[in-house]
Image (cartoon, rainbow, N blue to C red):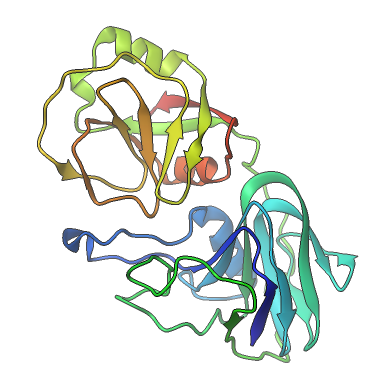
Length: 279
């Protein structure tokens, strides 16, 4: 069992996501930074969709009650195991009674903790990803307990990875959205020439940007949206849907982020900057 002595700002369990229910209004959910999580699961020789802890801004204090192996990744925290610093993207043996804590956030916004064989959480609609009201809660609280299978011995195929971190990247590669052709030349010029900053209104549902482009008077029916859909409001505000974003919307869908761009954006916090590049 893993005990959250302190839960941190917003810590949740996420896996690859919940698919096949968007027609019922159920978001995909799942890890915001799928690239970092995929590397963690490779290190632990887990299945690609294995559940992890997603840790936002400030980390929890974790007590391991049984032996296992873990790997950390995503945002750069000052990870500390029993008061000793540990590295990201490295397989780490932990023993019953060990305590993992998260110091200062150095870079990025969301960190991840994976355990060998994943967390043993019941699946709802095919996924263990937290999303209220599909699940009872959307984040873990102090003294929460999460079951995992003990693992006393494991020989990893890859002990440690040296990765090309994208935490400093600011360029988001995008595709044309369904209503892209309705934009004016002036709107397009501003869209791809300006630098945008993340607004304080950002979470797993959507990221808003502080800077605006010229507004519009386009009237359209409510239509399907996806994680990474960039919507343009009538006033010219840009809203980027994320993993818990709604499945339909009535604003023009002008751009669609690539999966890598979603990962890059998920590691940004308020005032961080981004730009768009059409691919």
